[in-house]
Image (cartoon, rainbow, N blue to C red; front, side, top):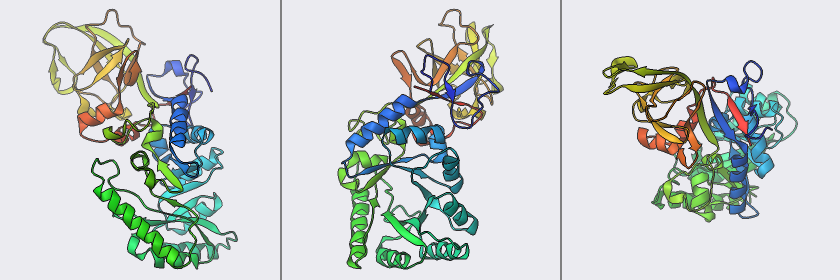
Length: 395
């Protein structure tokens, strides 16, 4: 792996040979050192008995799944979490041997055969799904018990069997051939809220479900409940494992959790100036001429746009970093380009690097900044960067 002072390497299956890094118009830079640091911080935050599952679904929140998976496992994570079967297969094809939990629902024979072949571990959400799994594994003469994870709905109202039927559901799965219960888990809906009322209610329901299961004499190999927010908010929610997503990428699920642990943002979004020009007072800029220059201005065009994942709704609202200074984006963000007012910076040159998200000097722009401007969440910002942007890994 190259250091940040060398030509960085392309992550995962992104273009490696067609273009050299220095020729890229725009890219997503992934700091593997920061990623490793965050995982180690989280592992230290947990009790020795609690394992860390790194959630690497959605291409590791846009960071590059295989590269991220290898880094987090080396740093101390024990498990990986994905949403879909193809995401799990991608990791296996990338050489990942660690246990992989599919957090989404799967129920077709094709999915089940792929899960068995690639040694993935599915989530079971209902008795019907459990029966489909057992029958399919019987039909394909699958000899080894398939580890499965039972999902209970304690208040998220998404996947999972109602917590009040936990005893019946677990007993059914335990009695089915070819299935081996690896864990029982649930998911919290409001762990990032300052008000813990709903989270505590879900916790109580989870505990009640566990009691139901134990009352039937069933041994539970592993329990997990906490996402990143719950991991930081309350150690009682850690159980045998926590499922951390946003935190491993260096962002906090909520401002009130920032004092719990020190994290470093992993992702930076960068692009190059492709053209510089002077425009006269009264000149309209970009589609719709929503910005009209009120004086002579020096304009820089940067090779990145909404087709790369820069939200068009940020038009005229965002700033970027150039030579460590904040400069204003002006006019409508277009599919492939944005325009900047660089009148205050002397002699801007084509090829200079602009940081849209990240840090230059002592100034930084974060995914939270964009999310707050757009009334959304940082998860959506991270997952929005398109794959024509190479993921470039640096140390």
